[in-house]
Image (cartoon, rainbow, N blue to C red):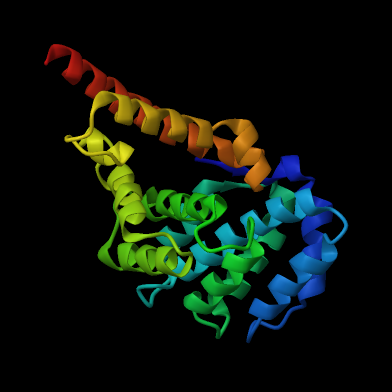
Length: 245
């Protein structure tokens, strides 16, 4: 998964955003939220996309600090996920570091972000997109660690994502080629019509038009494509199993 900020005309947007936040690293949470709200007040579509990107940067910075130590490998993992123009490295690094150093805890960030992104309602689809993206970042070093899973579970809880939905998200990332029923979030006891309906609903949720409407930047759609590939494979496996039976 790669997020390419170039297509968002990042230079002008992030200069404005970071200019509005200021340089204080002590408590920037309220500044970030207020800047996103006011800088892009007249452009709700851009505001949704910038909100999403800010959420990914800020929470990934907090996640890197979740174990109490920010290593070079963790920072490199972040950089491997976010593909930004060389001239924007300073701006992106500044926001990442401000969020990482902020005295506000990650739970406070999650609470604010849950109101800043998407519909502003807990459990809205864009919040699940953010958790899914954080999973991608967490496993960028080749493994999902216990403290990272705990962090993600708490974020999901704050976002209003139920335990059942979080279990499905975890299954897709921890064991993507495992139980196809778990990946689709269905039961072996379900009839095939129910499973097909569920699969079609998931496919619709990951359509580019649906993602764009939620405020997910186009550059993030690659992650949805990977997710859809796992869903397709799970559905095909179940269909093959049911036909054989």
